[in-house]
Amino acid sequence: MSRQIALPIEDPVPPTQADTAMARPAQADRRRRTFMLLMLAFIYSLNYLDRQIVVILQEPIKADFQLADWELGLLTGGAFGLFYTAMGIPIAHLIDRGFNRVRLIAGFAAIWSLMTALCGLTRNFNQFFAARMGVGLAEAGFAPAAHSLISDLYPPRERSAAAGLFAVGVPVGIMAGLSIGGVVAQATDWRTALLLAGVPGLLVAIIFPLLAREPIRGGMDQSDATTPERTSFLQSLRFLARRRAFVHVIAGSAAIAFAQTGIAAWLPSFLIRNHGLNLAQAGLSLGLLTGICGAIGTWAGGWQGTRLARSGLHMMLWLPIAGVLLCAPLYMAVLNMPSGSGALMLLVLPIILGALWTAPSIALTQSLAPVAMRARASAVYIVAANLVGVSMGPLVAGLLSDCFAELRGGNAAQGLRDALMSITAFFLLGALHWTLAARALRREADNQVGQG
Image (cartoon, rainbow, N blue to C red; front, side):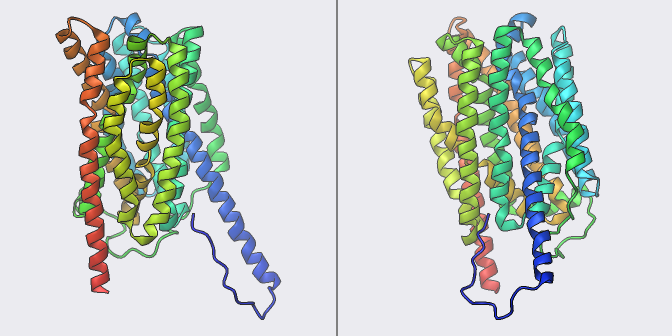
């Protein structure tokens, strides 16, 4: 958030009661928007708790349903991500048309929480797949609505920091899902863990609409005359596709999400198969690492984005690019560590560095889109990240794991290690696209200066 700098000039006229009365609403508005941002971050953490808890439960689910790794990858990624993607754009279109975002978020939270609990009642692969599909369908509307709300709560220069605080909900949710899921499943079973995971979201669905208020759309932006207030989805796509920087941000985010999600979805199984950890040990260790280190990296990415964006939007990309480039060799080193404790200690670095890009990607997606297209711009971002990343990352890793295991004479532990090492190459592809995005943003800034 930008700091207010007081001018060193005394006001010759003392403040009147009217001036004081005008200052109070401004302070109240700041408190209200901070409270809403914190609530959205908390709901985001529940969103990720419900989608990621399955990751730590993979091994007992595999044993219960007698599944191959590719089927586990489908449950973790495809069953959720494909249907999450399918509903993202239609819901975003409704949001841009004026639907109440606060009420939509509350309704979706109730549905995804119920569907998570239903996962614990399933008796076979098909039932579990259908329940996970329901989780994905319900969670599809949250991010576009939340991104749109944040853009109407904070001005452009403060959005990266606000998006960073909001995105902290991701590592916190993953931490809760892995830790609670692992401990509860170790003490009871995986079904109980899923049933308990659905409870907090139902409570939030009741409380959120009672406390949150819908802000004025576009109230934090200058008037936007470049596009009509109402546009079709295809018109919006054509407009956004002409922004070369937007296209590269989306492509880079999708590639990074593919690598990160593919690795993260299988790290618990990797530690269990290769280093002999149990569910509670893998869940607690990975949960704490992801939560603490991920939160540090996410906040740092938002903070640096807000500070450096004052010199141009392209400046907020360079630190995340460096972090993503370092992730590939660091994850390779983690996967080849001889001990589980060594692998966990080394994970600190790639988790922090791999979280630096989250807040700038959200902020840029919103800042490069007109007010009337923001939910749809967010949906395009989410569709790319989830169709390529969440849907395909775990599935491709599972398929490769089965193939490499067969090549290694049925060694599932070695097969999974080889698969995860393979997909680290997508970090390099993501860094390339983000570099091209930074260059496009720099050219846009130079052209604006030249025209001025």
